[in-house]
Amino acid sequence: MTWFLRRIGVSVILIWIVASIVFLAIRMVPGDPAEILLSQGGIAPDPSLVAEIHSQLGLDKPLPVQYADRFVGLFRGDLGESLTDGTPVASEIMRRLPRTLELIAVSALLALIFGIPAGLIAANHPGGWLDRLSGWMSALGLSVPIFVVGTLLVLVFSQTLGLVPAGGYVPLWPDPARHFMLLAMPALTIALGLFPMIFRMTRASVLEVLQRDFVRTATAKGLSHGAIMSRHVLRNALMPVVTVLGLQLGTLLGGTVLVEYVFNFPGLSGLMVDAVNARDYPFVEGVVLVIAILFVLINLGVDLIYGVLDPRVRRS
Image 1 (tube, rainbow, N blue to C red):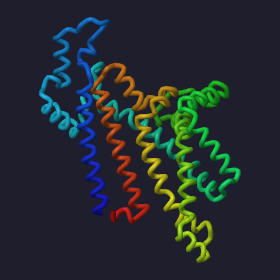
Image 2: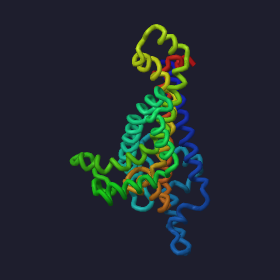
Image 3: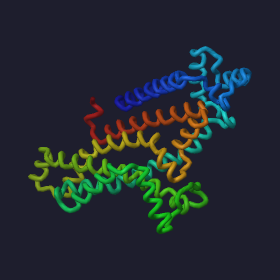
Image 4: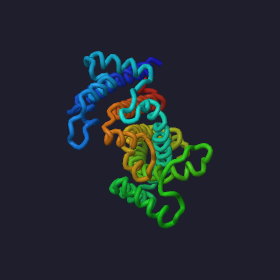
């Protein structure tokens, strides 16, 4: 329990550090956000309007006061309002965040469903036809950019075969069938990029664990191959897989921009791109902060899973 509480405490400190870095980084960006927002065709903006936006953003206050106000707002769940239409940043992020999280979760599930069994079979039959086929597929998945994969899926399944719509989004209710139909291709696009790493890491890890002494001992005791794989090999081999998956999930939080663009999927990454193009600094800061916090929480989850898979970690 002490180990778990210590890891949670470290994560809270990391979130505070990340929030502080985001706060300072946004304010160190060259240029006055109010002047950039109001500038039209090179004409200098009205100073009164600039002062109004400064007051709206709190930029007319000393930096320590801005810092304190920001963290008070964070504790209340207030991330400010959009400069373009006055939309509360927190509410728009919470509207879009579940879509991106669902997309990433479904993609990771597909990659795990196919990557781990393929890695296990390949490790048990090295050099076999499935090992070679999976190796070619993983090499292809690593070498083809994700936006090319998405475009090809649209071309084949939407434009040529007409099986699914080319893109878009509808809520889960009241039309779950169309919801998952629209989710299928973007999730498959991301999963095809995750599969090679899951497969390769599972294969390499299983091969390494199969050479350990406790596996030889279990074999000498007469345990069946299936029992050895399920009780001893798989649990130890999953540690590196969990590491890779955790890092990739964190990266995907801000890296689904191209997929969301190709499939017109209204997620969090697309919101950040729109905010950057509109010079909407409260939205940019809010999205970056949320992505950074989720990255820290994902790493916390990986650490906690480590503690479950390997009790020795909890004693470190």
